[in-house]
Image 1 (cartoon, rainbow, N blue to C red):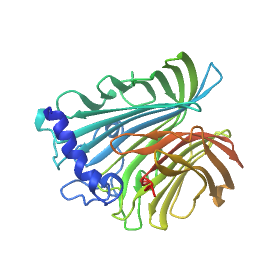
Image 2 (image 1 turned 135 degrees about the horizontal axis):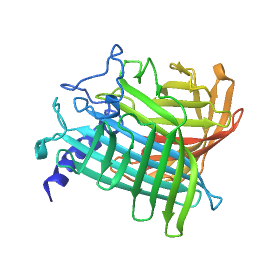
Image 3 (image 1 turned 180 degrees about the vertical axis):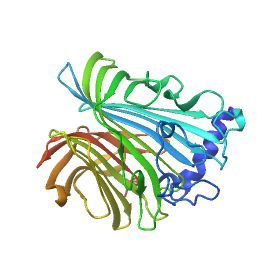
Length: 357
């Protein structure tokens, strides 16, 4: 076992075993920096990494339509997690406490292909720079050709059964969730810094064993960092990013805690205007489930929001979009119908495996 793999396994094992929130995200943040509502987001610096916080991610999803007439979904994610508090840069060789994990997926109604990459920080295998923006792990990249900002991106990834090469161009402003980017996650006050670019126009190609397909569509980038984003009893979340045909968009999530839950939402108008909504403003109700990887997963939902006259059904394009990664979860493209039509993405974590009787 090489040193990089050993370090990654040491990181994964305690988090996988803890009951303190999904993937250990409810464990206390002793020694790490924590979010504060008085701290304003700072661009372009905040497009880069924050090594004094324990966890962060760069999360891109896209709903695409191919020249073959098929719908597709793409996911590209880079996670950074710190083994220990250290207020230093990320280029400290093998002594770096930073661990990187990449997830990529290509989904259609017929298949769900996914891949995972693990890397040790500080040795050049993975990392993020803010100016110009570049995020990478091995040969997977998300990068901007511009000296500052993320209005334009190129996105590449490959797995055993898929490849994609995409170009993205923002069609609207960045969106700060919660109180100007300070996003509360529980009644106890856990929080993260959270912003998005929800309005990318996407062009490029995808490829599988069946060949290469030109695609077009829309993309949504989420940026989030914290040191304890969940309360101890929160076991997982259901997260929605929905783009409506009207040009409006909705980000909404439910953090599960037994029979209770904590919700939050952001309504984004066609002109890019932003309205945040606190706990209880949006209702996320499972309507139907599917058996996925030995688990019962809700793959059709009702999403209602009285303040916006919203009442829609959200349905998975492929119910089997299971990410069988180090921390397994469901993630895939969805269709939206009802008071508003559209497309989007759904992520669900923390659903336990069904015990066979």
